[in-house]
Length: 430
Image (cartoon, rainbow, N blue to C red; front, side, top):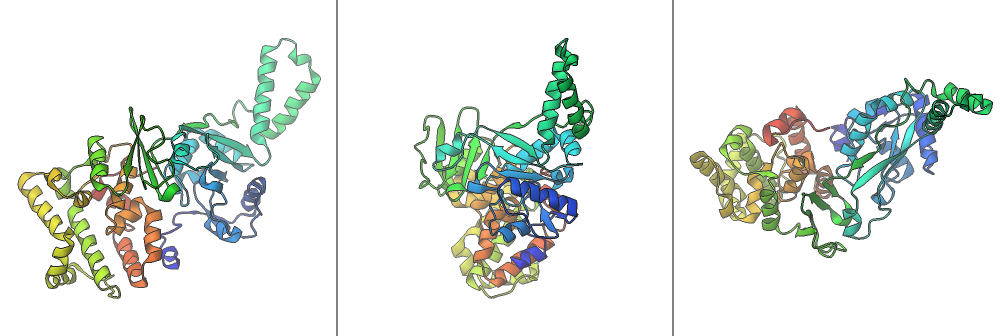
C-alpha cells in the first residue's frame, strides 16, 4: 500500500495531530475505551477520529469499530467535519457523523476548546449475526461523553438552573447555589455556551455494509430491498413480506430494481454525449483486457494512439470479450435515436451504460452498486467503493498497481469535483 500512500490514494486529506495537548486528549479517549494510549508524537485522523498510524500501533484497525457495529468516535476539533471517513463497516457512517457535527456545531465548538468529545454511535444491535440484525437498525443515537465530563456537568447545571427558576424557595438552598457556582467555573455561562448537544438521534437510511461479504440495503416507502450473497445467514428468511431479497449475482433483477425505483439514468444522449461516459468505460475495458492478456505489459503512460493500435491488432480477443464492441454499438445507437433500447441489452452489459440518477438521495450508494458489476472500471470503483478497489489492488501485480495509480492521478485526482460532475453528474458529497 506504500504506492497508494505516497500518492494520497489511501488515507488522503486527513488531519495531522501533533500538538501535545491534543495528543493528551486523544489518549484520554483511548483510555476511556479501554485501549492503550498512543506513544506517537504525531498522527493523522479522519472525521470520526480514526487514525491509521494509531491502528498500526495498536495492531487493530477496528479499534474504533469493535465488532463492526456501534462505531466509536473521538472529536478533537470542529475541523474534523471537513475530513473523509477512511475506515468503516457502514457506508453511511460518514453522513451520520457529518449530520452530528452540523446539528451540534455550537456544542462541539465550545467543548473542544477545553476537552475531547468521544463516545459511540449506538443502535439497537450489539452484534450482527443474521441479516435481520442489520434490518432492525432504524435509527442511531450518539452517546456523547467528554474526558472532563463537561457535558454531564453542563447538563447538571442546566437542571439546577431550571429548578432555581421553577421552585420559589430554591434560592434558599445554599448547597445547591454553591454547586451551581462550582459547575459554572467549569462550564461557564451555559446560556451562551451550548455544552449539551441539540440532536443526538438520526435516521439510519440506505447503506452498504461489509458484513456477510458486502451487503446493500435500500429503503423505499413500501418495501426494503436487500442485495447481497444469498448464502448470508437469514437471507430471504427475515421478514419476506416486508423485504425483497436480490442476489448480487443476478444482474437482471438488480438492474430492474434500480430502474423501476428511479435510481438510475438510462442511456440517453442528453447526458451520454456531454459526459464522455462511454469513452471512459471503453478505455477501462481495453486496459483491463490488456492487463488480463499481457499481465506484465506496462501501459501506465500509454496514450490513445497506442491504445488504438493495440485494439486493431487484437480484434479477435476484443470481439470474444464483447464489452468494447457493445460500447461502440451503444454510442452509434444513442447518436441515431437519442437513447438506447436497454431492455434488449444483455444483463451483464446494461451496467456499462448507466449511472445513478444524480439527484436521488441514494446516488452514491447506487453508483457503488453499479461499480460491482463493472470491475474493469477501477476508476469508478475507486471513487465509489474504495474498499473494493483496495481489495482488487492487493490482489493485482505491481504493473497493474502502477497503471491504476497513474490513471487515477491523471484523471480523478487532478480535479475530483469536476471529474465527478462530468462523468456522474454529481456535486460534492458531505
